Image (cartoon, rainbow, N blue to C red; front, side):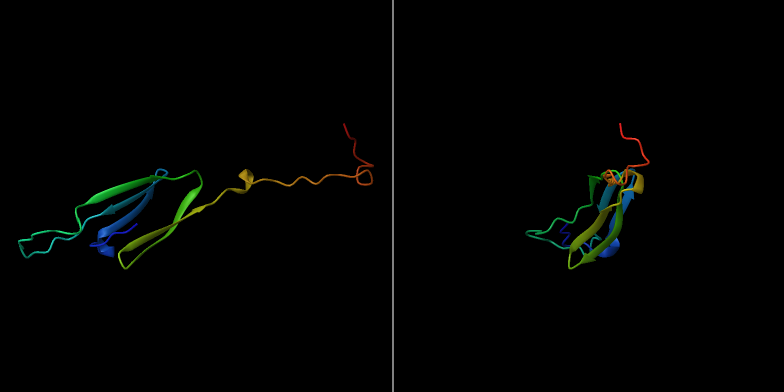
Length: 98
């Protein structure tokens, strides 16, 4: 997410209730200026992203005005696919096949 005009101290990344929330609030300069055009909007914002089940935010970085957030999908073992071996006649001698 491009956040030109913001500092890392003014950007907050929150993971709660299955959502990724990114909030930002730029610090206004104390000097009053008369501007003809203000190129980049620095008003406060909040952006929400719905995350899938078993998603976990593992890392966030802010470099040169770009916020990067790493989200990993961590599936529990009981939800993973299982490979079932196929028996042959030799392996099935003691087992009954239906």
